[in-house]
Image 1: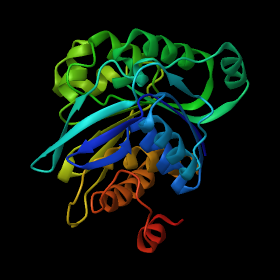
Image 2: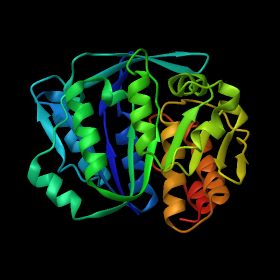
Image 3: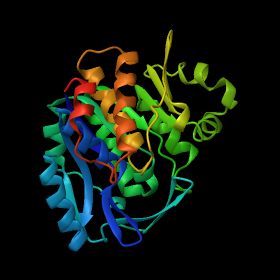
Length: 290
């Protein structure tokens, strides 16, 4: 698999603990752990956290040639867990508000093919990064365009959601985000699927439902995967691991139901660990067929 991930790279700060994350970075890291190739398009600051970020990307084996250095500070998210659910406070503006891409890099990417391009709403909060994202989505060739709605605070708009949907072949959202997306496209939440599938490019909708599992909807089929009986330690990054594994196993030629089941196995493991991209243990690797 070959994936291109666009958006925020940031440090989750929980008390004295600092963990590198951001949905696009997490997805890129998991795709590498699964055995695929990944590159991330983002920006970091010319500061200590920025240098630590670049070193961590290198350790994961993710391509960082499209990570630029911004005059703004590297992104930080103060994380607070309430009943195991994370909430975030972001610095603004920060480096990932300043994502740019050169003409020569765009030309190079335009000659390539990707199995998946992954993007969300958060990095679109700034006009600079939003313009870069839409330029990228309109200028590259990919089998799947994966839109992770990823609502955070007020860093989205109906227009940003609609523009993301217009380009997507796969939409992912959690059950709290369903009414937000429904409102953006002007339909009741209970009637969202027919309206989404009226979009010409959209082929699949993933909805994650916490401990109630996750669902994948296609135009003429649906699949459900439950959660395992595991001790939850940290939910940060679990949804990103599910996205990564779903895309990875789809790219390996597996059907959506099988891909969702394996993605759920990985997400179950991730919530038992600290950090968004831990090493996989042997049992998880066997369960995934790696």
